[in-house]
Length: 273
Ligand SMILES: Nc1ncnc2c1ncn2[C@@H]1O[C@H](COP(=O)(O)OP(=O)(O)O)[C@@H](O)[C@H]1O
Ligand SMILES: [Mg+2]
Image (cartoon, rainbow, N blue to C red; front, side, top):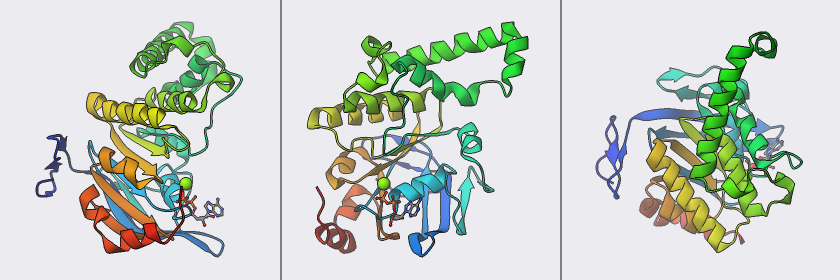
């Protein structure tokens, strides 16, 4: 990585990273007596693949939930594209172009792959379904557009052959890919992935890594991803935030955090698979 400037930087592999799009300032989040996040600040830059890593219970999912509006921190500020973001509902955050996947797959098992993916277009649909009932023309145009975007994403993620399969019948790795597809049809500018490769075998992990890189490369999507396994993110991410017991213990390039003594201690001090 060359020198960091307000306008961005160039990665080792020659990609241009832009200015700050999302900034967490001194975020503290508590659940009763549990401090899930303690005074953490970091930023995410345009076009970046930004990882959040740390042992189980470190507060990674909580942080993603703050970004996506599921949790509201007791202290601190979230800044998005140069403005302080007020407390928002998740659907409002989604409308600002931020889409996510969940640590535990959240798909409708009885519905087909295609129908599951279509639910990701909800943030692009008209405010009122009554409107749609009354204005068939408009509803139809919307439907055509939604279908086209869904089919493009299905091609991109190479899941054409399972588009009519009920999600409940799919193996785990493909379910995770369908969840990624559902997030992508929202056409997000920032994509949040909570452990996209957890529980996968080596081959599935390689596929998912490639798709994440391709999404970033082809659509210019900024990606913030959580990973439990240090090895996986090292190849994938431009910069890494390391959390442990709700605190930030490292922040920098993969090489920087890998050589950070606090990070090494945190990882050697816990048993993880
Ligand atoms: N909804 C919640 N209610 C109470 N405690 C929670 C909730 N979500 C997370 N926590 C607690 O916050 C801490 C961080 O959890 P989490 O963000 O899920 O960590 P990670 O994703 O790094 O494994 C843990 O101690 C967890 O038990
Ligand atoms: Mg988690």
